[in-house]
Each structure stands twice: as structure tokens, then as C-alpha cells.
Length: 413
Ligand SMILES: Cc1ncc(C[n+]2csc(CCOP(=O)(O)OP(=O)(O)O)c2C)c(N)n1
Ligand SMILES: [Mg+2]
Image 1 (cartoon, rainbow, N blue to C red):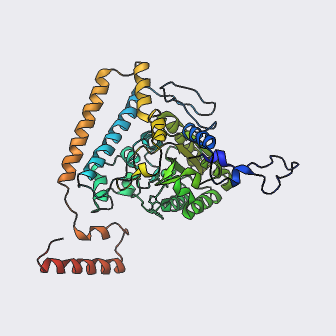
Image 2: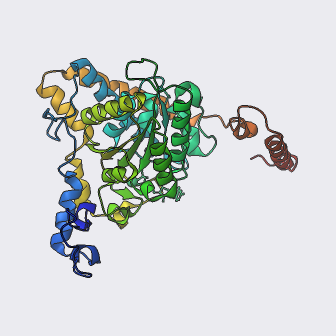
């Protein structure tokens, strides 16, 4: 596997220099990398390059950054740790529930806890979020109980939360589609006068989550164009977890993803997505830029999907185990734990309490899932429009009529 950095086509920096003669650009034409290139690519992939914003190293050391800093209390640090542990436990429990036949599928977030908690905690209550299908950590930050996710993955519901009240749109499975929704929503925020002058407490922004693979979709690029030309208050938050199912980053882009933003006319920042402090600081800044009328901003959270794409996927068929081992050393939770211990910001009682809380959450989830009621058949029609639509009403009646025939035949669905 190689990194986009490695394959970037060199080009003269000044117009006085001559472009290279045709065919002389080895990196761009080589189809099969050499062993050295693969190793160089692996290293670059796990390191993130010189522009990576980091405030907490994988070894748990606080470091400074010239542009981004974070004033954070020990209590806030403990709370970020707790969020990540509880979200990881939710993820592991749901994965196990799928394996036991309680859910049809599960989409793991293992390894992406810092990216999601950092971004989710950067939001203000009035901001709006548009997730893909993996944003269980952001859902947690928006106050959505993890039990509300279960019906989606059993295939009996579209999500039970009120997206306006929670300021969290329903999960979107169609890759990249939510970026258009978010750009449009943010344009609306601007037209409705919700963007402030930097001093308004009630100014609003939108944040939209998508993956590295989604950046190859037309919808995402169209969302970038609309967001840019209307100065929409939208943070495009890309979790680059290095893979789009079995497609590696090198098949999505020849340049690092955050650099794409400049072609659309807004800033792009690459942050260590396994560093909850850096992600929080960068996303806070980006949302504030948007609320103050300086949007959009692209954030590339450089992270890694430590589990399969979904429970239907087997990553051992397409990726090397040493890549996973390299990323395990950058675990987002472990580095915060080490930092808390070394700085004496948390004692053994605190960690035992979080563990106990996480056991109780897992038990509650399991209990709920096993006894989860199947919603009435007409529910899928109920959250489509704010008011009834004759076409939808007709479809609902036809659907209920169709189902009733099975009941008459003595069969239950
Ligand atoms: C429009 C569309 N095409 C294809 C798919 C099938 N699909 C589901 S997930 C996925 C890969 C997405 O990768 P990425 O954007 O990197 O997100 P990740 O799952 O890694 O978070 C694909 C191709 C889909 N859901 N929608
Ligand atoms: Mg991906």
C-alpha cells in the first residue's frame, strides 16, 4: 500500500521552470510499486505527514502547535476519556449482538472514537450535524441513546430520534449524499441570518461527516462547490480511515485529501484523528469560523478503521496485518489514559468507575436489543415529510393492504 503523497505528480513550482518532458514522470506512471516504495508508503500512511495537527502524541505526551491550542481542565479530559470508553463499549457490544443474530449488520467505529468525540464535543447545541452510517460517537455527543441506533441495524427502523430536536440528521447509507444535504442546509442557515459576526452566542454552523472513499463521489464535490460559492457555514469533516471497504487511499486521490480544499477555494486542515484534543481544537476553530461567516472549512481527520468495514466484510482478504499493528500503537483511548495517569489527573477509582459504567451500559443495550419491539409497519412512512402527502398516504395504504393478505393466509411477518 502506498500513500497519496508518494504518488503526487511533481510539477515546476515557478512558471519560469519548464514542465518535465512527456513520459519522464516515473512516480505517476509506475503501476506496480517496488518493495521500497511500499514500505515508504506504509510509513507515510501511518504517520500522516508534516501538516498533521497533533496535541497529544500516541505516547500520551502533550505537545504544542503554532496555530491550534486547547485550554482544557483535568475534569474535561476525564470526560472525553469516559465518552470514548463508553462509545467503544457500545460498538463492541453491538458487534457481538450482530454475531449472535440480534442485528442484521453492524458498522464498527473501532479506532475512530477520538475523531468522533473530538468533533461531536466541538459542536454547540444549535449546530446541525449530518452523519453517514458510522457516526455512533457523534450520535452519543448529540444526546442520542445508543439503543436508538439498534433498530436501524436490525432493519426494522430508520432511527428513532427527532433530527431537529437533536440537531442530528438520520444516518445516510448512500455514500456522500449527506454532503449535498448539509451544504443546502448551511446555505439555508446563511439565508435565514443564522450566521453571526463572531460575537453572537446563537450563531449556527453545520458539520457533515463522510469517509475518504466518499470524496470520489460527485455529490461530495458538488457539495464543496455549493458550499464554497455561497460561503455556507459548513464544516466538511472527512474521516480518512485509509480504506473504503477494500479500496485503499491510493485509489481515491493523488494528493492528500485536505489539499483538495484549496481547489474549491476554502481552507483544508489535516488533524490527527486519533488525538481527541487536536480534533476538538481544530473542529472548534472550524465551526467558529463558519458561525462567523468564514465557512466552509474541510477537516481531514487522519485515522484508521481498526475493525472490518461492516460485520459482512473480511479485511484479512485485502490488507496486511502489520498495518493494523502499526495503528494499534496509536490507539485513541490509550493515549488519553496514559496522559491522565502520568499527569495524575485520574486515579484507579476513576478508571474502575468508568469500567463499571461501561459494563452497565453494555448490559442495558443487550437487554434492550433482545427485547426490542418491532415497530408498526406504517412507521416507515411517518417521518418522510412534515405534513401528509397524498402520494405517500396511498403508498402506505397499499403496503398495509399487501401485508394484511399475509395475515389472512395465517402467516405472520
Ligand atoms: C452511492 C453508493 N455507492 C456504493 C455504496 C456501497 N458502499 C458502502 S460503504 C462504501 C465505502 C465507503 O468508504 P468511505 O467513504 O471511506 O467510508 P468508510 O466506510 O470507510 O467510513 C461503499 C462503496 C453505497 N452505499 N452508496
Ligand atoms: Mg474510509
